[in-house]
Length: 539
Ligand code: UDP
Image 1 (cartoon, rainbow, N blue to C red):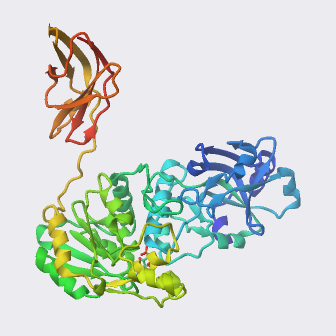
Image 2 (spheres, helix red, strand yellow; image 1 turned 30 degrees about the vertical axis):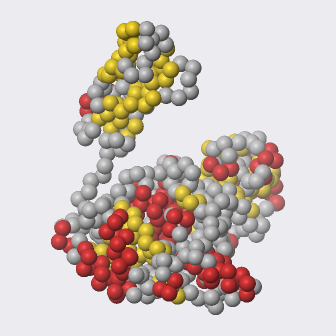
Image 3 (cartoon, protein in one colour; image 1 turned 90 degrees about the vertical axis):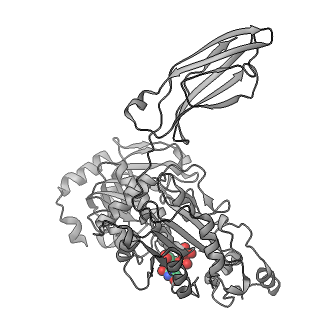
């Protein structure tokens, strides 16, 4: 391993001199530890102490310079999971002069991204917490290119999907455990520490029950671009599709949370949609071969579980059907629904839930982490067994939740098909679905109002405007305008949707009154433009 690092030759003497004289330099973005990413020159890591080290010299820079607030609670989150107390980053400080008494540093010449993977044993976590955030953090800093070195500090082994992490850069990612092999003191010539949280859409329920993040900042566009680059790097071609080879994929689990009548379900799907229906399973196929299949599918059917993250590889227009075991409310566990519903993902999402207790097989005697409840008081076991729905709960060890989610299910085919017939809009075979436009209108231009008083109790207000500047370059299916009228001093307003560029209001318009009027343009019902400057209109 140490050979690998020294392949890139660096002038050891110059590097050592720079470290001794310049010390460590840090400049960060972000106001809070939860939105901070730091760039370092000469950040070091002591493998014996398992601590990062910041060397102070006259030329050191530490921005932000937080003083002891650096520990309240930390400088930054090392994983993309917000404010998790096992994922904090900080460093120790030493004077650069101490280097004289320390082991000779080994320099890492590559530009390095240092982070924690959150749960590299679980596919959902791998994509949502690690791969997407790493990919887009690398896009944010131009020197984190294809040659960048990734260093995973969470302390886990490679995990079964390490190949996916290898796709992010041409260099082998390093694990915390391997750093020891390089020496006692490693110094990263240039490194970035932390991950962008911009692409995450789900919070796992550490402080409040799980659900979509409050302020989602990613759209289907970024997810799909990431997915298509990952496919390229896995040498998967999204082949040309024809109507005839429409097919449905059932993603099956083979160790737990089983569909007990898979054959029956497959037959029902094939008959109902007149489509070929195939199963895939992580225990039998490579990840890449599964993605190849999913990327051409019209429908993906699966029990709730991490394998559903692969729905990001479905073509636009496809449908995701998520099955939930008995007593699990689909509305309470929505990582895949939220993904499918991101604007621009262009996926249909349908949840089905087993409501028939007899169709469920539970495993009270398994270990607790596979849903066993034998370790609980008898009374508590009885309560769980009798309960018809798991109440909302926090992550991650709620026994009732684990008990229910690890049940196997006989899918009741009539109720399953009913849900599909009710919820699916059209045949989900729309591989030709084009990305819908996400271009927003500009402001309407030259908004004006004219008023007239007809009688002591009758007045008119005419509002007119010009089209937004970008509209003349666009083909928009439907252009509408929204006008808000508020009587000055009142705290309510009347909204109107209008098809043309002017309108005369006479209802509810009083003489000798001042109105505030806002106008904005709307494309295709939901692409809202900004309001023009407010108009002051006196009748
Ligand atoms: N897994 C699998 N086959 C199975 C059960 C699980 O491939 O029969 C995978 C699953 O996709 C995930 C990991 O094992 O990546 C952990 O599964 P777990 O049930 O703990 O998590 P969940 O799927 O509920 O997120």
